[in-house]
Image 1 (tube, rainbow over the protein chains, first blue to last red):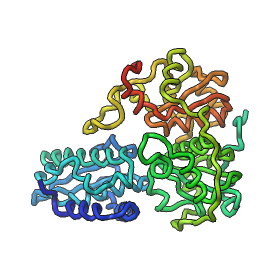
Image 2 (spheres, rainbow over the protein chains, first blue to last red; image 1 turned 180 degrees about the horizontal axis):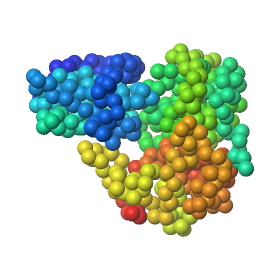
Image 3 (cartoon, each protein chain N blue to C red; image 1 turned 90 degrees about the vertical axis):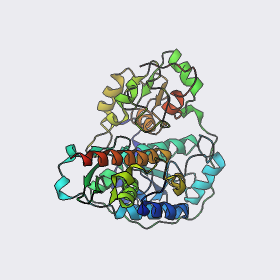
Length: 143
Length: 279
C-alpha cells in the first residue's frame, strides 16, 4: 500500500540519513512545529489527548470543504523530540483524505530507522500519535 | 532538619558560579534527548541515558571499559566534581548519577530544580557544543550494593522487607500497562511486586520549580509509608529511571544507608515467568 506522497518523501529521506543527520533533522522539525491556532487555545477539552506519550500531547483534526483533513497539535516546547515526531506526521499527512490517512500502516516508519536515534518508548508515542490522528480524522467526518 | 548529605545537592546559583571551574563538569541528562541541542547550560556536556549509557546489545549498562572511555572523552578525571541536571524534575539526571556511582564515581551532585528552575530564572542556555581535553579515567568494579537484581527482589518480597513502587497509581494498581495499539509496550502482566508500597516518584519534588521537597516533608512522606532508614530498601518503576530519583532522595537527602535501585523494574518483573504479582 502506498503512503501519501509527502509522508513517503519524509520516510525516504530519513532512510538515507546517518544517526546524526536524523537527530539534526528532528530538531529542524521541532523548530518548524506549527503553532496551535488561536481558536484552539483554551480548548483542550475539544482536542484528543495522546496518553501514550509521557508528554502532554493534544491534537485535533478538521475536515476541509474539499474533504481533505488538516491537523493541529498542542505540545509543550520542553519536549522537542515529541514535537519533532509530531511535526513529521503533520507534514506527512496534512491535506490528505480520510482514506489516505486510515491506510497508513502502523509500522510505516520502520524504514526510517528511527530506533537508532530515539528510544523505543518514544516510537510507541509516535505510533500512538498516528493512531489518535486516525481517530481524530474519523471524528472530524461526523462534526 | 537539613538534608542528610547536603554536599550532593547544589543550587542553580552554585552552578552559575562554577561554569568556568575546571574541577567541575556539568552534565545534562534528559528524558527528551533533543533538549540539549535546543539549548544547554554553557559548558555542559550531554549524557543521554539511552544512547550513551546502555549496552548496545544486552539489556544492561555499558561495560566498565566503555564507561571509562565515555568519561575520558568528556574530560572527567577521577576527582572531577560532576553535577547532573535535566528535564522532568531531574529524573534522568538521577539515573545518570546512579550509574556514575555504580562505576565508583564518588563526587556527584544534582542541581536542585534541574532545567526547569534554570530556565525559570532566565539563566543562559547556549547551543555551542563544548569540547574537553581527554582524560584517562579509571572506573571501579561495579558497586552491586546500589543495584538490585530479580532474585534479590523476590527474596526481599518474600521476607516482607521494604519495597517502594514509584510508578503512577494506575500502574501500581495494574490498570495501566497494555495501552491501546501497544502490545509490545512494557509488560504482559499488570500490578506490583507483593508487599511493595506505592510512593510515586514525583511526590518527592515540588511541581512549581522541580526542586526537592524539604527534609521534613520527605521524611514524613517515606516514614509515613513505613519506609525507614533502618531497613534495606529496594525501589523500582518501569525501567529503573524514575526509581533512581527515589533512590537519590532516600540515599542522599534522607541518608538511608541501604538503598538499591531495581533497574529491571516492571518491564522485567511483569514479564517474568512464575514471579508473584499483587493487584
